[in-house]
View 1 (cartoon, rainbow, N blue to C red):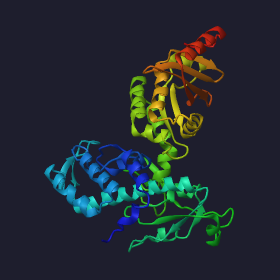
View 2 (spheres, rainbow, N blue to C red):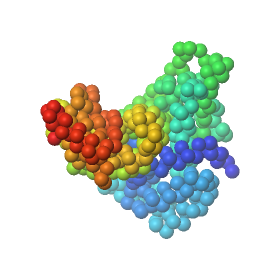
View 3 (cartoon, one colour):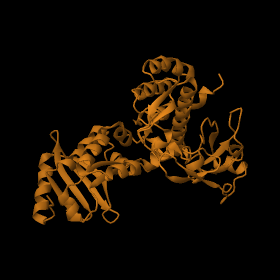
View 4 (cartoon, rainbow, N blue to C red):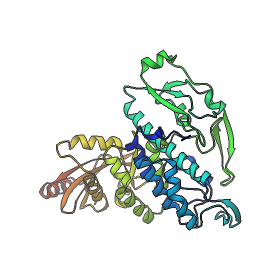
Length: 402
């Protein structure tokens, strides 16, 4: 087989987790989604208006989870797509302008592109998760020669580049760096990095940026020379570092009622399980609740949205090491923020006290960044007696907000 199927066998758990957490989003054109959003959204161009996205996703998930070759993916999907009319060249209405256009739907070549672009992106994200986990002992990355028979000249110039894991070069140049790109990365020790020529303070070659205009959106962006537009991100790093920015930015712009529903969806989603189990990348966070208007006004805050970070998760797990917390404990403690029996102010923090399913909790959130952020920092299970005593004491001190 021409393609190297062993590509993603090195990190199956991480790869599967990356793909499974994506949300389906029908589109007409691959440029309808920003590059960073591909780390969170599963889509196939020209899928809008056709009931085929879930079929392709299921076949793709099966291929990733069970390490199935492209031929199986193709043979499994082709009759389904043909039966649903998503095959060959047809006229389809572009939802952006309402104009009918001749488009290429399913074909063996398209299925190959879908298969390998998703396999390689998922592999890259899974490998990045391993890279973050191992960088204390293997703090460097080296760019390796592509296994492709036809190599891009620009990509060949990056072969042998050795830089620390945290260097910004890997934000844009972590492969794959284009459609069909088979470039690779290897994680190495500092001793090997030095043997390969790395020196303290060494920088990569100057990255030449070129302007690219997205004809679908009209937006212009700068893309590193040699990287195909849409591939200039590190999917694993984007997913870990920006999951909070992506979700928080989208949710924060919603009207309050929609925001409440969206946050509840996030807390009940697999993303919450991944965060509570420490499976998201360092720096990840999720919006998990809203504080009430009285709390916002008491603190002079400029948002009601509360986030939970991976750092706080680790701290909470360490505090409760004896109890072996599960994700439902996090969800219960978060639930107190939605319906507290009392909210007590303590400096720049607010302690929410309440019961969920008969169990009492004290969940603490902290106002930060001049009222622009709320962070869930801790929670503890309490007896009803202790919880009510805590409320009475706060009432006497005058620190009760509601």
